[in-house]
Image (cartoon, rainbow, N blue to C red; front, top):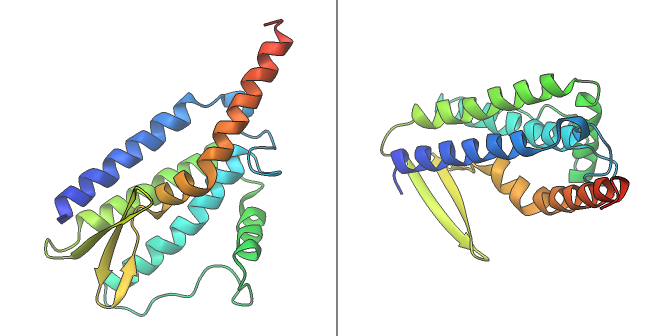
Length: 176
């Protein structure tokens, strides 16, 4: 895979993401229960929190600078603790703020990939029927589609179950 193909792939995933969000019920985006107590807004903020870290690391690597520390406190070593920190940091944002921040973050990934040299080392890993795209900047490896991959692998099943339960509940309330 070359840079142009990777960029086209990522742009396609971004458009799929935006279409997916547009199909979600606007009145339920802040309703808890999508993933435990998290709402869809919380899931999106969670994905974006991790994506910000990717963007900052990738930007530094491309500039030949040292990789920055994570934005969360260094004593947080467990992923669940980091997720809780990200949740706390974003829980009071409005849905519009979260969606805007997500769009900016995803467009930044696209911009960084678009600005890379055409000879950037890109690998496609195949695992359990899924593809994961890696780019290498020096000895550092980055997953530019991590936002989408993480959603697909860890959150989409919960969102789909939530949507099904919501539809069933709505149907029951409407006598269907």
